[in-house]
Length: 258
Length: 313
Image (cartoon, rainbow over all chains, first blue to last red):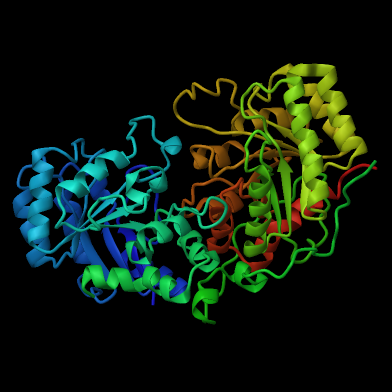
């Protein structure tokens, strides 16, 4: 079984996406033998009112919730986010959050964000943070959105030891505290592999050594990305089959209570 | 002395990913055989003028854009071995490599020692590493002599140009004319971002390469890393009407649809597979692309073999 913790539905403001409806994404997943995927709204990344994107996702996955696990995009600086969180969790059955501090223009250390993390944690929701949405060199002339700093993430995981974080679309963890062995941080975060190297520098292998295979999860970024590069990483990774199975599905199943 | 011959047989050891899996694009290796929907053929453009139109060589996988490690890095030998090991794992038969200077613009001594190290790499990994001769065109006569030495006499397969000059600057033209004379491709660094890239002020983009291609229609140009060169949709569209520019699929970005758009706009005969050190990204994109198995064979190696076959004696 493969569980992808990094997938999306809907339109992205700056590039046409294919396979971006629930039906089309499931066809793509079938062709790659990906069983389940955590999905959030691509539109909500740039919508002012992100809840509109959550509503779109909820409608898309309504009859497909056995395979598509909806995540909510919440902007803690937008009016009514507490109501949105309640609706997303209780009515839409969303299992987690996706936070976009750079796109939504707030600091992870801000009190509003800390309040959101606490509220989601009380509900048992997982909090995922895409370090980036797309390669910054491709960016539109309209904007320049930096990657989320890994140092900000360090402070966040330290401040919320009971929260559970999944870090998406990131790289360079072994160059900072997050990817180091015995780093003194709570083990409340997992790292998704879509941008990690599995050969040459092999950051993926280093993370397994340093943090344990329990802390790494499969994700592709589809349909922004081809799912195949992430699948290839698992194939060429020098790791035991037991560790690969954890990464492929078991860790996500545990965290998402599937 | 020629220290390299293009080999038609595959010299690499057993790989972990079968060619069948590479071309079908699936998680089959990890999960066992599965039934896949038939691949849909992409719109295929016409062959580039001057490129022979015979059937592509079957099955050979050539990374058109690779690098050996500069020897100032203490781990260069191990790093080069890792590159070959990665190629083994991914089913890549041959890697077209240059060695680049760590700082630009490259000095004369700087690119000379890089080319010597590339030649050493060709010797250390016979049949696996093919050499590009890297020069800074600003060195004029010395740069041309370097190309003649390594491409003309020592069997390097092409020329690598970086960002010292925009490719439309006249200082580059003698290099292009020599490449035409020798019948070898130029792999040109390129990127198009919608902002000024301060540390690469003379960066070329797809538009510059198209302009150079119009000036020299008999040149064989390769636009480097469309997937690591900024707005790839812009680049692909800029190259639509430049039939003698091939598009290197390498780069760290894995945006879904890149390969399909390149095939639809430029034609599959103009796509060449590359990694530029982003190994799983490079191979994964081709596996994931919605192209027929035959078209993937062209991209993975057939098109590059055709290009290398145009070398003049």
